[in-house]
Image 1: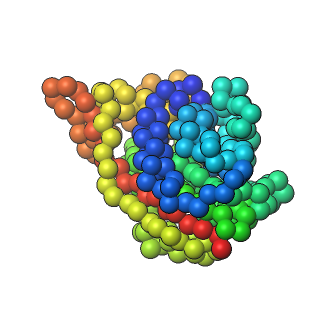
Image 2: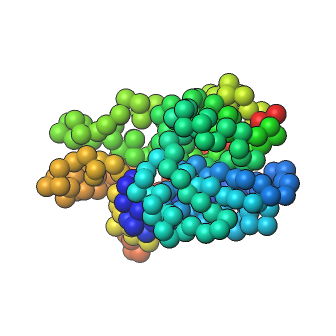
Image 3: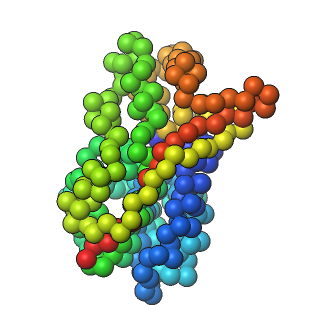
Length: 267
C-alpha cells in the first residue's frame, strides 16, 4: 500500500466502514474540551480529513494521523494537512517510537481498516494503551477475515515465493473472544464488540479488481514484467473461489465481508 493515488481512488469500502462505525459510536464516547486524537493507519489522509474530522471538529484541539508508509504520510500532509490536522510516519508495532513521542498523549485513538494488516496485534495494543491518557478511549474497526490473505493462500505455486510474511498474515482470522482477550491483556476495559457479515457493491468487476490492487503489496514485490500475468491470476482466482457475486445483467459486483468494531477504555 505505497501508491496513495491508486488507493484513494478505490477505497469506498474503507470510507463506508469509517462512517458506519463513527455514526454508531461517536456519541457513546465521553468527550471533554480540547482533546488530542490519534488516527492509526491514516493512509493517504482522506478518511482522516473528510470523514473522521467532521465528526470531531467541535470536540478536539488536534487530530494526528499516523501510518507506517512514508509515501502515504507525505501525500496526506500535502493534500489534507491543516491547522487542526497533522500527519506523521509511525509504525504502531514499534514500541520505542510509540513511547518516545506519544506516551500518554492522546484522549482518543481511532483506527479504520488497519488492524487486520498488523502482525503483532498484542504488542500493538500495548503501544496504543501506552499512548492513551487515563480515561482515554479507543475505537477500532477492521476485518475479522482479510480477503487478500485468503486469496494469497490459494494462489498457484509460482506466486508463493513472492508472497511475504504469509505465515504471519495467515493468522489474521481470530474468534471474537480471542480478540476481546487481547484487548484485556493489553490493559483495556472492553465496552462493546460488534461484528456481522456485510455486503459492499462495486459498480463492476473491474472496480473490485482495482480496489484489490490498491492494497496488494505483491505489486511492490513482483518484477514489473510479471504484473499483468499476476493480475490475470488474481482475477481468475477470485472467480474460481466465488469470492464475489456478479450480476449477469448489470455487472454489479457484490463482496461479502466481516468487519468487527471494538470500543474500549483505559481506566
